[in-house]
Length: 33
Length: 480
Image (cartoon, rainbow over all chains, first blue to last red; front, side, top):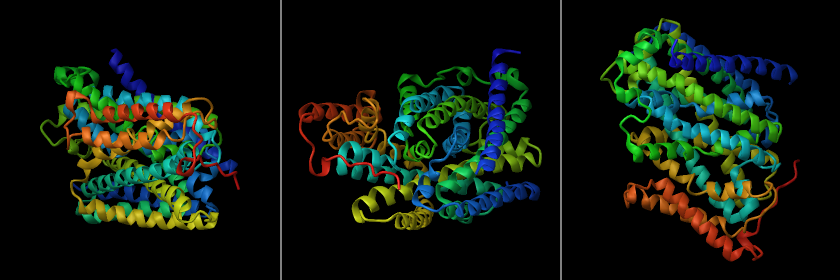
């Protein structure tokens, strides 16, 4: 794996992680409200 | 190239969910504060998501893919300007703005520092800036829906825009933020999945390296210093501290939330841009010699399976919707707060301001659709909308915010308004239509420079003079 592969797949992982955290955050915020 | 019924159904379901969220939000809106800044209740994660959704519109998706297709990796380098700006804004500007307390718009802040003159100029320019960007997004929505459904441009634009106007009118900033969160989840997941599929089609990174030209793979391509600087400046300043972002900084629970929500968004956006650029680079191999603006939609239709087509087209459409709703809401709030409340009816009550904001949402919403459809070259005008913001409002605003604590007035109130006028006038005169950017200096840079020069001179002359009349600083009302 070259460093470009790592960069691209790491970027994808960051975005997917952001989606996951947002879903969890939204559920928790909705419960509080 | 209309999509399959199954994919169209996915998009329709997205629209219905968004309308449902908007309807649900309507019941939660009880005051102008709810309508304008979501009751100042948004936590870090949701602030991050609404920033990410708002910042990702037609330009950040279709436009960025087109640039990557045409020019290569260099467009990522230029985008670093935007990322840098967001991180700087997150760390230093957003928390200071939120710390000012009961403010709703940039106009409120400029009124605090530079009196009614400052608030008036800011209200007018931020309103013009916002509705111009709104018009461009309306057209972008119409164009993509036209491709997806096969309907002509006018009904496509009207359908997409009416959905946006409806939920934005109903729930204001509450609806905009909640739908932004849903829209972020869809667009981030959908576009990243599309990128990985499409990258696989070209044979991964090794496929990109084997088949792309050296220009496409080089960091600065064949752009030259002048072009690269001009693009980087536009990315850095173009939407810096834009009114529709500021409203989000003010919707958070606290200054600390504003700081971290925006900073984390800035960092995230760099990685997201890499994903978008990968789509464009892959397109350069898979679909050579087509119009760059059609690359994204063509790649989706040709290379993604049914189901994913609907998800990704849905992602693009909701990405643009999430930008459009934010700007529409901001435009209505700016008009209500900076023009109506300040200059037409200072005694306006909270219920009256709520009613006005809702009415303005409809007027701007529908007016924007009509104007966007009447001016086919409106996308070409986007570059001029940026002239209304960075060289006019930004320098005086940033100096006041950054010099001492945000509620400490360390600058002369007289300095801001002439600097604003000098900045925007210089930008237009220096720009392509009049002087044509002499000495290879971009118009934005010339305007910001003129702004700073006039600011410093007036500050030096007037700093001991007590401001009166239209320069007398406004006070921030205490929270109701």
